[in-house]
Amino acid sequence: MHVEDLLRLESLDLTLLWGDGPQLTREISGVTATDLEDPGRFLQHGELVLSGLVWWAPADDEAKAERFVAALNGAGAAALLAGEETHGGVPEVLVDACRRHGIAILSVPVHTSFRAVTDSVYLRQWGDLSRRPAAPYALPENVRAELSRLLADGTDPDTLLTRAVAHLGTPPAYVLSATGRTIARTPTAGPLSVRRAAEALTATTTLSVDPDASPYGQWHLHLPDPGEAPPRMLHEIAEVLAQHRRTRLRAETRSRAAASDLLALIDTPSNPAPAPLRRALQACGLADQGPYTVITVHGPADDDGALDALTEALRHLTGCGFAVGSLPTGEPGEATALIGARTPTATDTATDTIATLKNLWVTLQSRSANVPLHAGVSTPAATPQDLKGALTQARYALTAARSGKTPGTGHTPGARHTPGTRHTPGAGQAGGTGEAGAAEDPSPAARITAIEDLTTLDALLTGIPADVRTAFGIHALGPLADDTNPSYRMLLETLDVFLAHNGSWARTAEALHLHVNTVHYRIQRVEILTGRDLARLDHKLDLKAALLCR
Image (cartoon, rainbow, N blue to C red):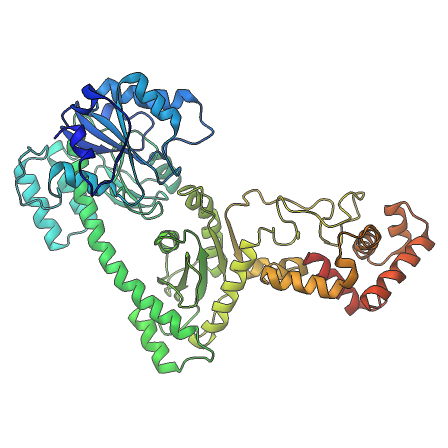
């Protein structure tokens, strides 16, 4: 098969971005999918290179694309097929680099999977290990036959990986998850910490097992020292592991269906009867006694990304079971999990679980940096009958996480502050909106919020839907909510500082550089316009909440 033959396959819908006669008539010897910055050492002459362009970012300089294409040219690659999904298209800087190095470049649309391209080149999936294709395999025939039998028997991934590399002398090898969790390792491979394993995912000796999987559900084959193993052989081993993974995914799909049924039972107007709830818990492999914790995640809306992200996060927990599914009333891109009772010998607590998830969240978010990943966590539910309340808590905490505000500060990164932000330190000690000293969230793109984080009024309000907060603020403040009126803006500023200083006339006057009588006059005007009496604590709280809801 030649490069130009791919363009004739209507099912692939590829587009030629650059290439002429000599480049298009190059013969394709094989296919390699990679997102390494320098894949040269893993390529063989004449191979077609598939890349999702995860290694490139819009902020990168031209030299990065130049190095990538130079590696392809040095290895004698037949052509580059670049996926459009990651960046919405193929960067022009990459096309220019291919033109300079004489490498044909074709774009792969979002609806065409890399697997479809590979199948078109080999005319059949490599997955049927019992068949002999026209082109020779790198793995010996007896090894392929053994692996085929092991797959059919449903062997564990440790055994599968060990037998796959046994003919190489069983070098250290790992199968790692998207967040650095060790799924399998050979007997010669020592334990890897999650941090070290996450670092290994970027190594040049690491291959993606299934490029079509979501970023959170990826498996990776990692050989610290591949030695003399041909790159093609490593890709074939990765394909064996991909088949094992797909078998697991079928079982996981059934588990998610059972979890969704459980969640639908919990998410009813009234608490479900004990017997159906007990059966639904057992169908998910969970105990029929608490405590339980509910966590809800919002992420990618167009695939199983949120389900995969939540599942991957929970697999880092120990001493507890879990069920991950979708709520019938949930939004697109929303996944919910019920974390079951811990084993009698487990020593971790609900607080430990939340801490583990929060520590993991940055790594999980990095798997798909363009899609914010938010989560809300309930307090422990003591019994199955308390699960409905825990689900309500988790969804409320998720709304708080998605609000973009740091719990306890009332501050939205990048948002307009309410009047009072220019005041002297000390003006904000009461916790009002826009107060001096409010800390900005270091990672506004990804946030996990637990109900236990909502310990202040402003934090509590972040869980209320935005349109409800806005409506409350408008109606509670009355005419003062009109930002177009300079006089009302002045009164609103005075109210903000007055409440931040606990109703102290003198300190408010000092902060605003006004006479105390002026402060009295302005607050009296606020009371008339809002219908509130600021000598009353409940009315102060009403207006404070209204300011926080702006």
